Amino acid sequence: MASENYRTGRPVNSNRNRSQRAGRPVERNRQVRSEKLQEKRPVQRRTSTRRLDEIRKRRIKNRRMILSMAAVALLFCIVLGVQMFQKYSTLMELRTQEKKLEEQYQAELELTQELKDKEAYVKTDEYVEEMARRLGLLYPNEIIFKADK
Image (cartoon, rainbow, N blue to C red):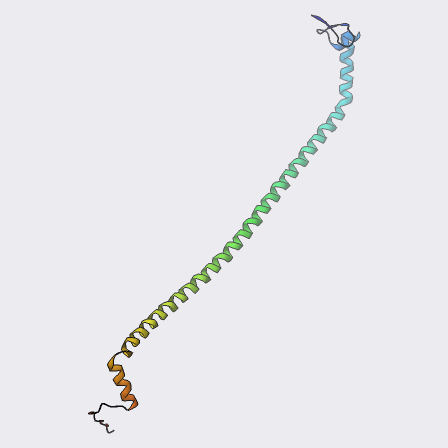
């Protein structure tokens, strides 16, 4: 199938390669290619070496990134552990303080109950008589007996 080149307008046969269209023999073209490949091989080796170096550098960089991320994660865990230990010790102190305060509260409740009982006793006639005897007061028909020692 012949078609025309859109720039030149000449017919182009797609079955032929460039060297045949240019008028060069195929053998000559192969020889030129092999010479060019021989010339380029050291350059390609350098390029492949350069690529390998770049790959190695990327790997090293990736390893460094992974190690740095691991170090940051480890540091984070250490800081978190220290904080947890501090909070735990504070919690233990507060629990101890809570127990002491609970004991004080129970003691105060007992004291309050004793005071209420004493208040009820103070309102009785028996307490009034006891206090009057301490002050030396007597009923009109009462006689004081002193015990001899």
